Length: 238
Image 1 (cartoon, rainbow, N blue to C red):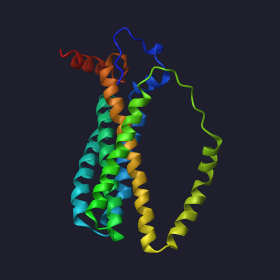
Image 2 (image 1 turned 180 degrees about the horizontal axis):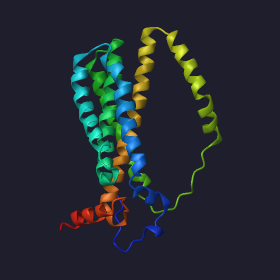
Image 3 (image 1 turned 90 degrees about the vertical axis):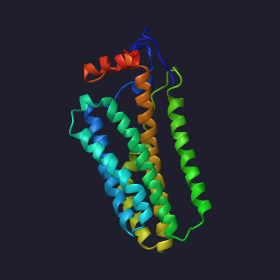
Image 4 (image 1 turned 30 degrees about the vertical axis):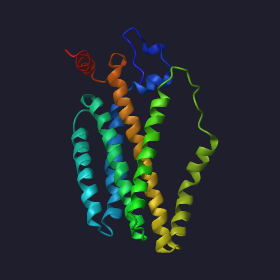
């Protein structure tokens, strides 16, 4: 991870490095905390967790989900200017919890289709860790060079996909209704893997930003100016 001395000026750094040194805005961070905690995790996962009930799955996931939900509420009721660093730390932890809970649900669906071999679940957990590792490595690689990178334009097909996505989703839902329960469970397991990967990305990005900022705190501009002094004192060990 790059560390810059006190003589470095942000205006001399490439755009991607400056992006890594910026906390999320106070409006963006509250939306991210609320949507990734209460909608994408709590709301979307509750039905797959509860129907059917498999107690070991609940024992593993519900305490973790309760922990991040309470922490999220605590952050949302406080002023975002006072929680810029804590919010990054929270998103990193939320990413771990969300990715792991969705991984557990995917394994639950594999169990429901009849997969009972312990070796399979050990192998899948190793796959989960490997995928997580690649997300973390990608974040380190992204911010490991001072070489200026050209800005990427959004391909035109992205906009076309956004237009046709609702219709495609409806067609896919109709397709699922015509499949056997075995195939539906298999497809849903893959969907939960996808959601798990989304939270891996959130965790890797938030943790890297958190530690990157702490290592280069003198280059960071917080909404609350007192935070600059607070973390400078910690960094210098005063």
